Length: 256
Image 1: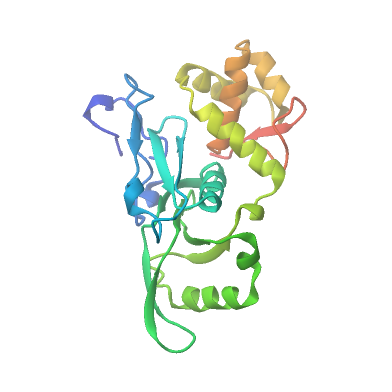
Image 2 (image 1 turned 180 degrees about the vertical axis):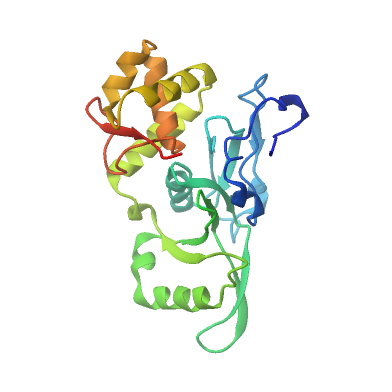
């Protein structure tokens, strides 16, 4: 059974039940130290290392990729990248992602050998890995650019990733974006007791229940409200992706 480290040998990693993830190109994020859960760990990039020119806009954001994960600081080469990263990181099927990690060699449409460094490499709960090229909305929809990406995707080995796609911040529905903001805000907190209590309670509320039902049944008030949002963000509780976090929103427990 996979453990996080010697200081937490009594704590299972939240993704230890998904052993295929540990054979991925990179692993799920490490757990936070419960004695210092708000310690910030920088990702693999430094501010000076990102971007293609000295004039690049550099943006940072803090989040946990899971309610028990270490708090990480991500650096982004532009506002567009930051918005895409934030929306990817808050999706319930995303386990982890890395910025500017993966190089893909390919022959371009003129037959010249070259390579591209992909903006985002995403690890999904299923074990599938997705490469994402981040572009502003106009270019992300441009037919000629999509043809370039399709050419790269056709040459990307399955050992590197399963899919190659393009995204801008407008790919994500406004309701999804609002929910993601709530998820990241809730994840900055640290309340394993409330999280565990709400998750346990969800087993006794029937096939589905409303947001308000589980919060009121928990008798934990705002702690339960934040815990539900974290549990939805982590995929342990589910809702329709385009439903907002509102009292009447329908929730259900994810299949084991």
